Length: 175
Figure (cartoon, helix red, strand yellow):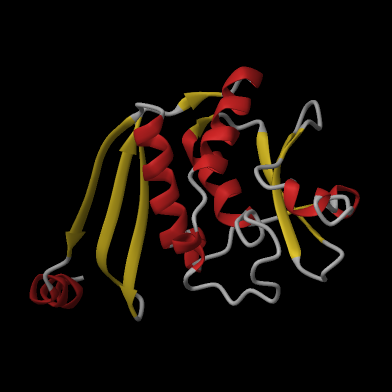
């Protein structure tokens, strides 16, 4: 069982926590191929609603590389994969996962380059840290994780808990 959490903050204080609980997937080539296809099948425009895209309509995969890569990373049970990013021909960062031992690349959205007769910027790739304050998953990443987990029959629960501000203030004063 794996819990994937996203905290919402008021300043430095956590005011709510969304927790998605899944049965993580083992890292195998077969599972990677299936999961990447499931992620691709679940990429929809609503996942991009807060993104400022320079080239809207460029490709159905354009703009989805970060949250699809992070979702894939979160769903897996492995420490062999690292997030990578590199600047592409548009001057934007592209994201993928790479196996630390074999250097195998797992990219959920490479088609956005091939339809433009370009190559993904793997040659410019650098190990990267996840965006988000304190590394928390983006809302769209959480939503994609849930979609994929339901499709893969590994979904267990999605809960949101809220901190009672009065209890929080009492706790902070007593600390």
